[in-house]
Length: 264
Image (cartoon, rainbow, N blue to C red):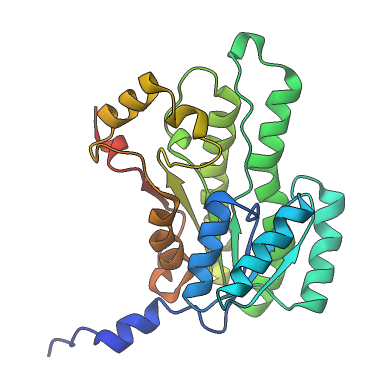
C-alpha cells in the first residue's frame, strides 16, 4: 500500500525549531538580525553575536520585545583567541547549540590591481576564516550530542564575480567549498552543513548600489524577478535548513536570487 502524505500538523512539525538553540553571527543588524528573527519565530532560542556592543544590545532588546527568547554575546568571530573562550562560556552559561548560522561578513571594494593587502585579508578573515573558527568550536559538541545544523551564508558571488570584489568573491567561493567539506567530514555524525546564497538583497551593505541608477537598472534587467530581494525572503530557506525537514540535505548551496543564476 502507498503511504499517506503527512497531514498539516505533521508537516508543520517538520519545520518547527521548538527546543532548539541557534547562534547567528553578525546578527546585530541586516540579514543576520532578520534570519535570527525568523528562526526565533519558528521556535528557536536565540544567541545573537555582533562586534558592536550597542548594536548588539539594541538587537537583543528588539527581539525580546517581540516575545522571543534571546541573549547576546560580543566576540570577534575572526579571532581564534576570542572564539574559543566565548564558546566555553556560552555552553556553560546558556547551553549547547543545535543550530549555527555563520552570517558575519564585510565588504572592502577595490580594483584587484590596486587592492591593499589589508583589504584582501580583512575580507577573507571575516567572510571565510570566521566560519572555520566558529564552526570548529561548535562542531565537537554537536558530534558528541549526535547531530546539528550548520548554515553558512554564502553569496551569488560564490559563483559569479564582477569588478572590484575579488576579495569578496574569493572568500564566498571558499565558503561554498568549506560548506561541502564540512558535509563530507561530519555527515556520518548527523551534522548537516549547507549554505544559503543570497542574490542582490536590499541591505545596508548594498545601499550604495541600490541608489546607483545604472547599477539598479542592471540588476533589475539581469534578474528574472525584475527586482532586488528583501532580507525577509531568506528566512524560509534558513528555517528549512535548520529544521528536521532538511535531515538528508547536506553539502548544498541554496541560491535565493530571483532566478539570476538561471539567466544569461
